Amino acid sequence: MTYSVIACVAVLASLLLDLFIAKTSLIKRRALWVLSCLGCHQLMGLRGSQIVKCQFARNSAYFSMFFALIGLISPATSQAMGSGDPFSDAQTGLTYSVHKPWQTLLLPLNKFQLIICPNRKEQWLYAQYGASKKSIEIMETMAGVKCSNPGLSKQAPSITINNRPATVFIYCDPTTPATYKKCTTKDIARLGGFLLFTTKPTKTLKATEIQVQGTGGITYKQLLSVAKSLKVIGISTP
Image 1 (cartoon, rainbow, N blue to C red):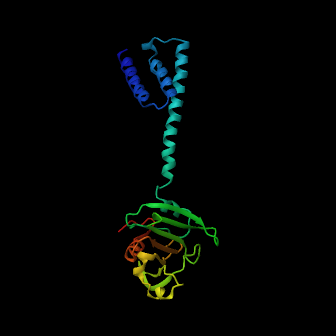
Image 2 (cartoon, rainbow, N blue to C red):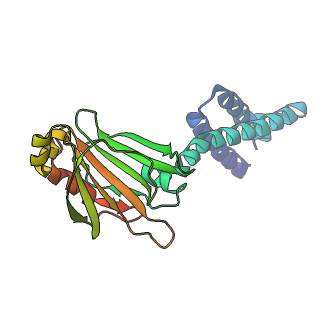
Image 3 (cartoon, rainbow, N blue to C red):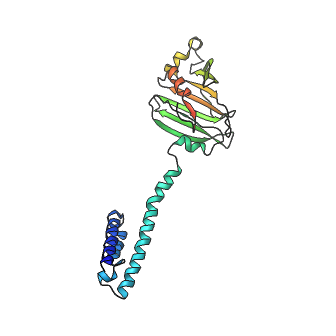
């Protein structure tokens, strides 16, 4: 008898803990039923139909707790399916390599989109750091495919970014020849500009054409630092 009482007390203690953490009133009510009868028929003095009723309540409580647990776990599972990083999530649906910047000049990610390319079914990637007044914009598409057109600009001498040839463009107005002729990379901070280069393909992904654009006071040096920080998804920052 002593062992039965100890076992019953242990069961009751366990159920009290379940009752304490129960989220819904339905679980609480059914847990109270279980507290009155589960494994403690002799101690509680239950007989006949009361035992059957308690057994039914016990089984109902188990099912309620089970589905409540599924309800609590399911959102976490769904969230785990997404990495929480839009660049990583975007890579799963693209055949070209996605590159993420590790240097964003402390500007927060303000916008991230996958946009349908008019010439291809495959989408192109657009990310904006900062706001419209001062921002870094990154556009990625499959190499050789034009999905967007930058504004009128002046091409500066080519450079190298991550061992790849890159072209520099400054948003100088070609309708004012005198100013246009004097326009240099220093004017990127005042007028805006962008860098354009193509990455190498990986073993499983196609090459990517990347445009890194800065406006609203972003200097050429800062623009270059952002472009050089771009890494293929899956490769950590140096």
